[in-house]
Image 1 (spheres, one colour):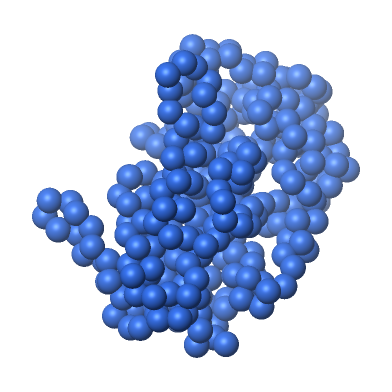
Image 2 (spheres, rainbow, N blue to C red):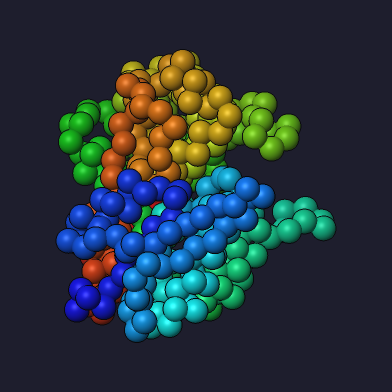
Length: 313
């Protein structure tokens, strides 16, 4: 059966793909990606994939070439007569553009779904979408995984008393409440006001964090502005230790420097996006085994329900 499976990776996050392959006891396919002087990308496979089930592992964070590279790898697999093409997208770019929040604007995540479908995927495996409804943008099956599978065991290993889960904004209320229920602890919510995108003007905490060990929980850290303000605010409100837990660490611009100089004690992230450089303040938990297990379930046509024990967060 393993001979019918082909694991492919683009250049966005090869270390994660290698971990997934090792967990499955498979080798990554021998493919070649060429970028010409003018920036154009060409991909081709150096071994046959005719009739095989091809899993293409590629997160789609910036730059946009990562998205294009994924589409070209899908197209190459389709033209090479792959039996089935599964896109494994640990971080789904443009997921924050899930609706029309003002007149005459695009819905970028729907466009990404259309592009992947048109390119020829038969299934999508992804993790912690910014908005659950994005699954409905696809006309193919979507396996939506949750980093809670790796985060919750880590939190329990801390053995903290007076634990409080805090969402830095109201959009993460559901996520925080599910974690709090699973951990049988309190939770609080940050209420933020923005003057413009990526810039928070004011943030208040709804709930009691005084004397608590706080975990700020989010799905994406981009510039780090919201997290830094939320961490400072919970400290002002009397919190003891402050950890930040985030699935997708984009860390745009000078975000890494900003976070390293913040009052946060530790940042717990996953490897859906590779770190730009190592940092003593960051602990990286791998999602390779989780993704590998789901790939195995797709191969064996078995249920993946056991990976959602804490429900939809």
